[in-house]
Image 1: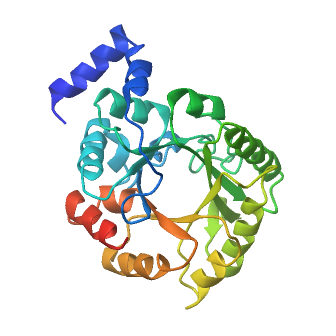
Image 2 (image 1 turned 30 degrees about the horizontal axis):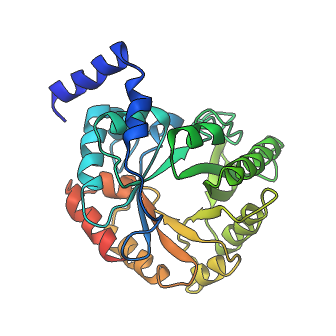
Length: 295
């Protein structure tokens, strides 16, 4: 990302803010939510808005917007990548760069549970709402639902997610729900990735709202049980995409796990961010191509 392109975005934002909505109106929308493989391949980049900037061993990796945009553009231009997930600031940068034509665009809705904050479980909707996603012509809205049975702040988050599911369905937009059972360990919020906990989270998320007709799930890959993902994906008939999570020390092992799970009936694709944008060897294109090959 050249300094001139960054300067151009900044100048447009300062002098012609209406250019964002104009770019959204011009965007060529995709014909389908899935690509030629019948699967959805989304690059996720909504982490910074929750204050989660780390990738691999670099705690500030996603803090440089120009570098993040550069990596995103490389990823979005790879064959087989048909979507992107982000908050308004980032998606608008990509709109101004003309990078979202024919892509499935997923607006991130609740980023209020800042990483490491005492109120982290209280994931308030500080990003897109259903009306905003509809107004921008985006295809999906994504929400994070972490449930700590010991924390009463989980209840309003759950209620807000249910309301968002209904509001998106009214507009025929997909609600992409990312559920976890969570708990505090030494004061820090941790997601329980055991098969039993993920199955429980699936059943709760699938039941949100007055209809599930427009609900998809975004789920982690469990590895505590050789049949764990079969059990997880058998808990619901809703379409499910696999999330990438933290940058692994062994990316090849992660790719092998994804490949196996993608054969299951309700698995509809991947939503991966840091694992592909910040691979250990720095080769974004190669990491993305490997992930796409699994589809």
